[in-house]
Picture 1 (cartoon, rainbow, N blue to C red):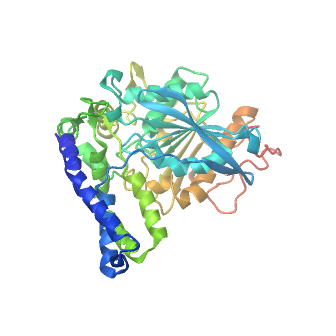
Picture 2 (picture 1 turned 135 degrees about the vertical axis):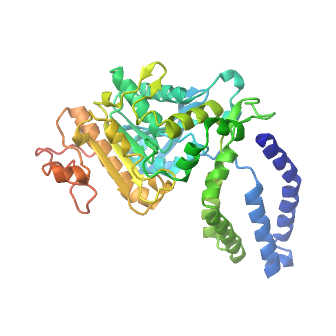
Picture 3 (picture 1 turned 30 degrees about the vertical axis):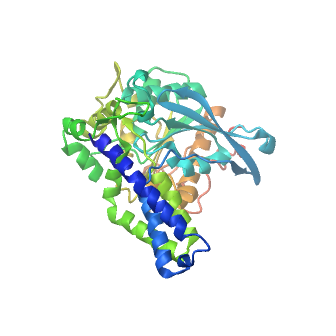
Length: 460
């Protein structure tokens, strides 16, 4: 019933929004003298804020048209290279006529399936593009997938990832952001147990809930305290007509968005007050920045009910993966089987969605990865979204991931025993390993390895 009430509210507000838009256009007409008065500016700003709050935001576009490689502007063409009912695998191809043929590491970015579209990682993709061959998972809005397409649950998510990795090929580097950290680790463990040739060369987990019992947040507490049938009764709805997924049981995106916004309600209210004031003042830059953020943040998608409920039970309530009890289909998930995939975990110091230590728990599970291929990094001063977007991501986190991937790539392609960058706590026990790359002014782990210097691309 929640979904039907939501649709009815939108239908009811449509004529109101139309009237407000007409009023705004009338007031904002250049020849209307009221538009130059204080009262007129306030009314125009109020109409704009009302329109922003009440309209439905569609799926945004990545809109990445070009990137800079070695000082040259290179065109980017976005293409779907593998299509599945619940996800498209997208590749951001770079124009070889501009920068020449490159042999950069292949990177699969696994976008979260937690209410927002994959375009939330636009900044992540843009930072990786100049020096990597980038793919990303573009998950489908469940309300647009016909019921005839079947179910999609946690196990299907893992199967999709293994299919994508096989499609991309050997020496694929996997980056999982937030929620998919768990299925990405499971997929890697399953492929390792099968001794598949296309096991990921490296796995980077960023702000993911591997073990939510460590420093639990409000999100973790809610998921653990409520029984699974409470979620089924209160947050699961069926898709209403006339959407393509009519009658499909889903966890609606608007409910996920409501939960996120209520966690920081005062901050969002203040942001819209600031929007009103900036509209009155005519501060176009601030208005544009606000609108760009909320056009992405307020665009939400539905999740299949079976995927949502299975994730709640498996990850947040039963803790099957950290307790080494998780089964994928009929196979026991054993992370100790991972030996050929280097592991890096990244956390934000102020993350209020995935607490400190939850992602780092992956290192305790992957006991057979060599010590010099395990790296953990905590970014000071950032919250959850700062781990994969923003200035700190571009200037501090991404360069470390880049160096980690290049080092692994060089080691896999050459077969040499290249030393990997180490966490500080390992350095204290093993002083003869590579320099700690979290300290300022340290040399790259790729420089001077056994007197040899790999090429700049480390993949050519």
